Amino acid sequence: MNNTVIAYYPGCSGKGSSAEYDLSTRTVLRHLGVDALEVENWSCCGSSPAHAVDHVLSAALSGRNLARVRSMGHDLVTTPCPSCLSNLKNAAHAVRDDDVRAKVNSLLDEECPTDVEAISTLQFFLEQVGLDTIQEAVVNPMPTLRVVCYYGCLTTRPPKLMCFDDPENPMSMDNILECCGIEVIPFPLKVDCCGAAFGMPRNDISSRLSGNILNMASELEADAVVVACPLCQMNLDLRQNQVNKACGTHHQMPIFYFTQLMGLSMGLSKKNLGLSKLAVNPEPCLARAGVR
Amino acid sequence: MQAITIQEQDNDFRAEVERRSGQSMVECYQCGNCTAGCPFDFAYDLPVSKIMRLVQLGQREIVLSCHSIWLCASCKTCTTRCPNSIDVAKIMDVLRHMARESGHIKERTVKAFEDSFLASVKKTGRLHEVGVALGYEMRTGRFLTDIDLVQTMVSKGKLSIKPHSMHNSDQVAEIFKRFNGGIHE
Image (cartoon, rainbow over all chains, first blue to last red; front, side, top):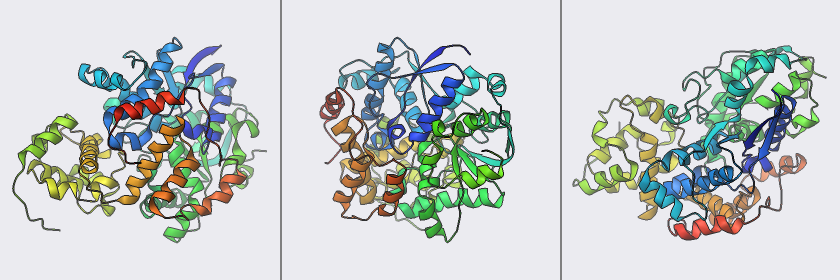
């Protein structure tokens, strides 16, 4: 791909707890000839707290960002975060209804457009960059690295809204990583919930659910879990010691963003993929896989 | 299995849930698929399929005073698997809206997290993770929440004392001001 330009919505966690997802996504996109143009003056999509309080408020917070995309002259925006994606898609869908649109616009300075579409960066890689282009860029396959792909809830759900991949057995990340020369083993808990935003208010619940994912990955003798969601990553990686404490386990399971492994297979520097920002040290696992 | 004593039927309740969610309650024939797939069922006091039945029967008090509607994470497994294409997760959302409005707050920490999150967005336009944690601790008095994560977050450069800045964050504050309701700061 040569100099494709795409509007890019990083999401708030991309500026904080998932900085390495934002960094590795931009690094890999750039390497593949895609210019990710950050949405000018973007704001928070409202995430799950907004729709837990009110659907019009949620659509307005996301709708403001769709308006920002439109003002840049774009009708497609991509985001690495499934929660942002879900909210942006929900807003775009909601404003097709005249009554809802009027309510949403009554909260906004700039009207929410009806012709802006949002897709995940994962979908963009698969459908617009393509597996062939990805495969051509691979210089450092890692055939001894055994991983499981964990998609979480919102990447493909609900299917009528997300219109991407299979809601029960998604394969997009599996296929991309296999193209990168990585061994991907089938994972039965691909779309189970990690506990989402309950890490702070109900850690007992999120620890149990994240524990299920880590236990299964460990039973399958995976070297690492690969994710596409900042919240899943935080629950499994940063909170892994909390999970171990709650579940009486001793996992030291590295949790990569899929873009980090794509970048490594393309020979990109660890620094530009933010590998040092992962809480569970991935170096022993990478050393075993022959990655310098 | 827990037995529930049914109260007088309040059909306005069912009609309000239908209107606000855009879903038709009569479509639910109690197959139980939503409950079978619900990852939070172990933590629920009422299974989601039973909530659907209680809404059909107009049981306002029982439904709005349960814990489950606060513990739904909107993972959408129920919505994905409902054989009648009911957006069950949206109904759970609407029930939580109604519980907030009528002061039925059965999970105070969950509400405190949501309020802290939105207060942070209102203040700075983008979410400030430290701000959410502090807001949550102030609201709940649980001052040691996630204290074990601080050292790792600092060493990984993930804990920013200052919010990530944007221009015109007052435009976001205006959205909240116009919305004017539901969030208690």
